[in-house]
Length: 334
Ligand code: PEP
Ligand code: MN
Image (cartoon, rainbow, N blue to C red; front, side):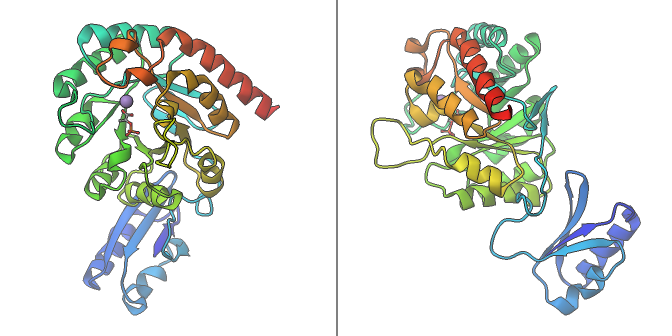
C-alpha cells in the first residue's frame, strides 16, 4: 500500500504515522518521490493500517498489486527530468554520454575527455570496475581509475558516470561521481538496488541482457521504493538467437517504456550492436523511437583499446551523430 501525503502534512504527523505502523507491527517507510512524500507500507492487515490510512494527512491511497507503481506513468503522469551535475536528462533534451569502455590510464581518459567535450558530449563515461565475462580480461583500474575519471570530468567541465559492481564500493563511487551506473549484469542484484535507493545521487540502470521490460521496470521500482527517485533507464540490447550483432537492440522497448513510465530512457547502441559501424544508425533510431539520449563508447585508439574496441567510435564522429540526432528530434517535435 502506498499513501500519498498532503503537502500540508507536518514532519511530526508523518513521524506519528510511522510510529503507529511500527506499533502495529507493520513496516512503513517515508519515501520522497519527486515533489510528493509517500508512506510505503509493506504488507499488514487492513485493521492494522486503517488508522494511518484514515489520517487527514493522507491525500490518496494506492494499493499495490503484483506490478510496479512508483515508476509508472499512472502514478506520476508527467515526464521526470533528472539532474546530473549541471545537466538535465529527459524533458526534451537529447543527451549524449560518451567516453571509453574502460579508463586505461590518466593520459587516455584526459585525451578522450577533451575530444568528447569538443564533440558535444554532455556527460563523460568511463568504466573503472569492469564486469568482464572472462576473469582473465582487463578488470579496470579501480580506485585509481576513478580518480583519473573525476579529474578529467572536472578539467573539461563534464559530469561523470561510472559503473559500480559491488555494494562495498558503492559509497566511494557515490561520493565522487555525478551519475552511478548499475550495469546489465547487476540489474537484479537486489542488495545493490537497495543500496542505490538509499543514496540521493542519480542512478543509470541498464536493462539486463535477458530481462523483460516488466523486470526492468521492477528493478527501477526497487531503487525508488528504497528512497531514491532519480533513476534513468538504459536499453543496451538483449540476448536473442541473432549472432551478427553482440545483442539485439530492443527498440520497441523505448516507446513502450515511455508509455508505461515517467522515467527518462537512454539507449546504448555500443553494447547493443558490438559494431562501431552501426552506432550512428542505431542512435538515430533511438531518438526517433523517443529516447532521451544515447550512451556511446568512444576511444582515441579503438583498435588498441583494452576493452570493447570493436564497438568504440573515434570521438571526432560524435559531433556528426549528435547533430543527426538533434535533426531527428526536431522533425519529431515539428
Ligand atoms: C558498460 O556500459 O560499461 C557495460 C559494461 O555495459 P552493460 O552493463 O550494458 O554490459
Ligand atoms: Mn564496454
